[in-house]
Image 1 (cartoon, helix red, strand yellow):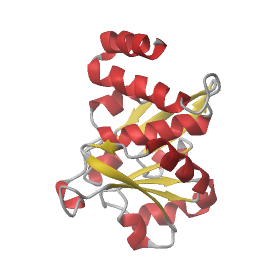
Image 2 (tube, helix red, strand yellow; image 1 turned 135 degrees about the horizontal axis):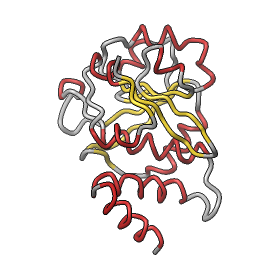
Image 3 (cartoon, one colour; image 1 turned 30 degrees about the vertical axis):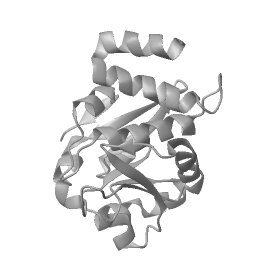
Image 4 (cartoon, helix red, strand yellow; image 1 turned 90 degrees about the vertical axis):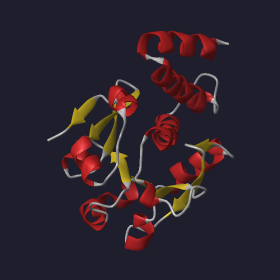
Length: 192
């Protein structure tokens, strides 16, 4: 019941779409525990919502039924959690497919629509970003330095809250539109 109240309050304040997104982050993340929500729960909820809010070029899909592919390099635990949480949910009318990819496999990472780069691959960030430069792949990782090096979204934990910074220049050069709802949720937007 409290989720409906939160959604209604957020909808009035931020607009219907953004309020629903934030409420779904709370609902999605709290499914694991009534009181304790981990940083990973929140990041997984954000990733699911990014799949619904970001616009990719039509050419990045083989057909109207093609899935949105969320790839994970260096963080199998987060991939497992997303798989458990999404079930048969869709984003933008498309199924969501979770893949574990090797950062050394350029074709595999270019086949992703959204690529989360975990701590296990932090040493290869520059190589990963070079490999998918100008490809329509929404890159997400942790730490503000990620967007400063060309990544698109960087998670940060501040005061026990997961926030993110968005780099619109990198998104635009990849042919991706982040959308106004994503930009309103961002702690900081970098456009230079």
